[in-house]
Length: 372
Image 1 (tube, one colour):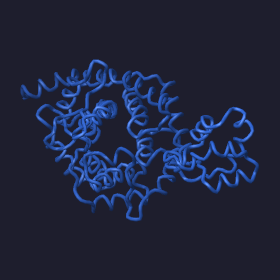
Image 2 (tube, rainbow, N blue to C red; image 1 turned 180 degrees about the vertical axis):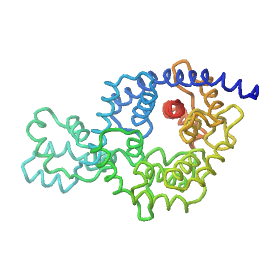
Image 3 (cartoon, rainbow, N blue to C red; image 1 turned 90 degrees about the vertical axis):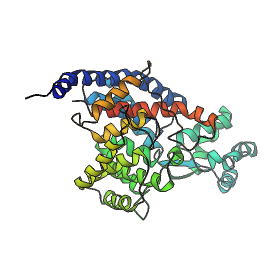
Image 4 (cartoon, rainbow, N blue to C red; image 1 turned 135 degrees about the horizontal axis):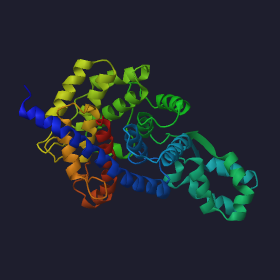
């Protein structure tokens, strides 16, 4: 005999799915608008914007939600080319300027290039397109016409970061690019693995509200997932994470569950998923850390790990996200629980749009992942 609870659940299921699908669809224009603006204004392959622009749209596409495939292909093309461009850096040094003088570069022009050896943002090197833009700012059009090729010939070239370990991993997890890009990116990632099997987080990921050890473990597991279980480097990384100290964040639980499921420890994966379900708040959402308010970022991550629409925790999470979505399709994600910047309100204000975008993308990805 069918119970009233089961009957009500069966009747509610189609409405629940429709509401989740509609929430993803509403989020896409916001994610496109802000993601494209980031590319155009910053020309930056960031770990918290561009990969998630692509990833969210591709997850939506996979579940039959209308996506402009021509635009998506353009973002993928830009992302792969940008990552490849960031794998080689260009810079100048004092000895290089001496060589240029010996080659006949006028003293006035050499003087204009001297800041390239002292400015902190240029000393470490830039991808060639940015380096050439800096040259354009420093030299006259006539000087560039006469000397740019000479400068580029003498400039130093060295290994870049490909946009960062986390960014490259996200691109792989999002399925960006073809087989050739995936193979070259996996090979490039191996060059950043530490002797103990870990990978270090990049940029803003180092300043999030978690210990250094937890940050390393999270980056390491995401990277291992991007490389896949057939990779010896990934297997070594999983061994590192299993020995590492326990983390406190929802993201740590998510990557541990995903990692154990991918690398053969199904029982351990279920244990982490049980703990993840136990952290679901009364409103249906998850929080960045225990005892904080629910937010879309943590809830999207949790849905991504749960993965199945049949999981009992999913309908409540969908309801939370559907009811907390803003009119523009985004979700507000207060930075404070995610970062260590709580004592600096002005920094939190600057971070607010970053976490709103990042969290909105994860909400869309998590919702789409649970759709039939």
